[in-house]
Image (cartoon, rainbow, N blue to C red; front, side, top):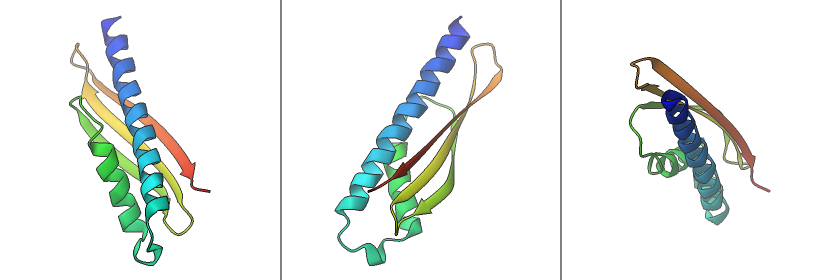
Length: 102
């Protein structure tokens, strides 16, 4: 029961961090006045900057960008968190979100 609870807490942390980072990234995208100089790498970096400050638990996190289209405001990201449970088992959590700025 304790392990399941810890897993759910970590999953919720990743989900919340992903949601907030996506919203903040899209807000930055909308506020960006010079989109000519704002490409895919800047879009990704904005997301990473917003995402990483949200995390508080330990463990390894990887980010997979399926799409980062700065020209059209389309972002599709999956984050994976790996950690050891209280029993010493390696566990993984995956959360994916897609957002389009209209």
